[in-house]
Image 1 (cartoon, each protein chain N blue to C red):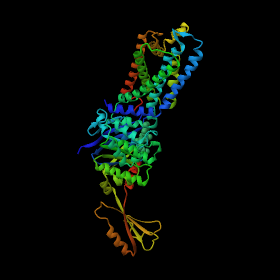
Image 2: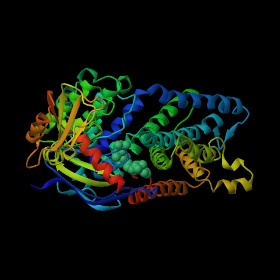
Image 3: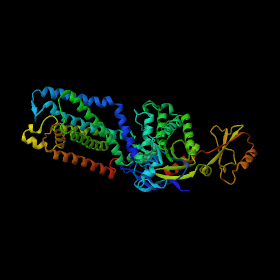
Image 4: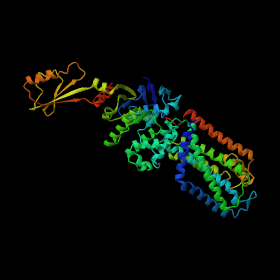
Length: 310
Length: 253
Ligand SMILES: Nc1ncnc2c1ncn2[C@@H]1O[C@H](COP(=O)(O)OP(=O)(O)OP(=O)(O)O)[C@@H](O)[C@H]1O
Ligand SMILES: [Mg+2]
């Protein structure tokens, strides 16, 4: 399947001389939700701005829907909706007017029914005639989303859509993303909340210092790099790790009440059976067992950390 | 050409103008009324006639020009600077519009606003003095061209300005002196010969003179020269805009 967004060897050097993107390659599939993760200053916003035409690239090529974003910018940008990271809105405008303006700016004929529908989806219908300055921060962010959706984009960029948004609204936002995905909209979002990427993304890309470190299907990524922890609660706390277990990946919690065994889910054998047998032989009585899948966060931190050391 | 987008920008800008209609009109009308009282009545009572016209009537074209020029510049420069300042420019930059369409939308709206203001001042002046307009069509053409060219200049200033001080700088330091010294309130022939020569380097002189000609049929400089001057000034602004368009100067990082 051809990609809907194709970024090839894109480099961006700002006027200040700072290289914010150093050779980014990224293929985004039609209809997917791609989460772009990376620490502050990694280049996420720069990458999105470059695709959307807000900043110029130093070199490389970008196509959206097969249209070059420079030579055929109208066709490319017609497909794109952008929700910027910063809340940039005119304080004295009415919600409905700024949304209509966005639609017109993208060359779409006015369509009151569609605009009303967008406002409704984002629970902004009762705020349609309110001035932007009267809205709360979370509502303002929804106005930005409404503006981006006003012209019926095929590709939607969400730059930290849930920064500073409460739990309930975040769940709403995830809901909205799911709905849009169901309508076939391709979504690229950046976030610092790993659980967000876990919850809604199909694929995950990690960027650091202007380079894409990895792009992987979420499930595969977690399976490939995921490690599991088996936590064994003991009936009697131990002073130290029992003898004869030095060779296995076993550690004792600080209070001595829990043994923690780490294993690879992708491995041939997990070693759980033999561990439990050996513990029984050593006369250790178990109270409870728990397993925990290591989160994307662990993977992410591991990756970025490794990169920073290199 | 994305005409829908041009229309959207134009309407959005005009909506801002109509929302603050009172302020938009009040200050130019107010200051014009003041000029009439101070210059027209107080000083005018000592000056009999200038070039066969009562002094009160003589200053009307200059007053309109003064307002229209400053309003065009401030409307257009603010119009494009404001989105830069509050960050909504991201939308213009990511929309399927080119720079020329953005210019038409913003400059068109700014010029329309100042045209309105110019006409309102003209209407106001009928209350104070007795004037007839010798060449109404030429008068309108001069007015429209001045609104457009100064709105273009304002747009360039708005693109160039990096902060509010710079936004005020050019209008305050360059345009206001040129307009005041451009014969708004006097005929150049009233100046000593040396200053008459100096004045001829002031482009605004040609605009005001031409505009005044359309009212009274008399002018400081030949009407052809005035037409050439306004045409030249408009072309110059368009050339700069074209250059910005080609180089992307100060628009995209
Ligand atoms: N206009 C600019 N001029 C110069 N440098 C810039 C500019 N914008 C961003 N940068 C630099 O480019 C790098 C990448 O910035 P970018 O905003 O893309 O990061 P980000 O991944 O979006 O970070 P965050 O998570 O904080 O939003 C940073 O080092 C930043 O300082
Ligand atoms: Mg960012």
